Length: 252
Image: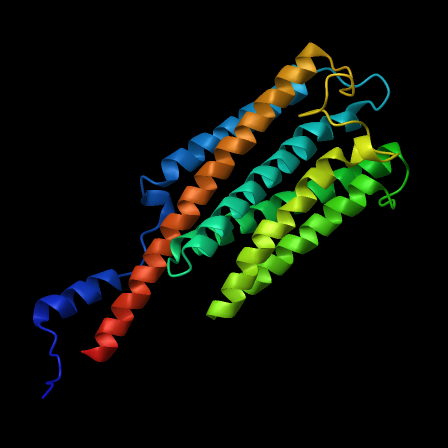
């Protein structure tokens, strides 16, 4: 005969401690790396404005490259992370950790893609005279944005079936990433050739000072992106612990 389980004072106290208010972020040591990363971004921005010269043809508008290109690079990295997390989830569907990492990476990647599109639109309006063009690079980037929005929509839906569907989108959807990057090589486009990860014969010439500023910007965005993912996962762990503690209190 089964008997009801009674939770002792220690168990209830532990549950209540996990339900304590979240600490103020600016008073926690975990924010220190993020502030350091933000300082790196600010430093790279200063170098991009002070060290790097203005473009001979595009003038000061070319400086948007130091935002546009690193944001696109960060989006690529995040979506590669979604791919890895989705593969792990399909191999181990019972584990929730890959799904959480995939969702965090997709959220950051979608935000970075949004920044890429916004900066590119402003830059394009200044150089081409239009905010949008049905160009292979622009259209494929917009498709990438929508693919990972669909991934997030599935992630935000509870249930095992949407979770597996999201993992499938995370694997198959990554095919759009190389299409975006190499679209300027495979198709005739208004967009200039890729500055990063381009074949040596296709890479456009770049002033060494511009290359240094761009490299620092890419490193800064990468560092802040990694830190943001780590902090995001820390927040998820805290929220999961609070949810479990609330369930324990309801059962006690």
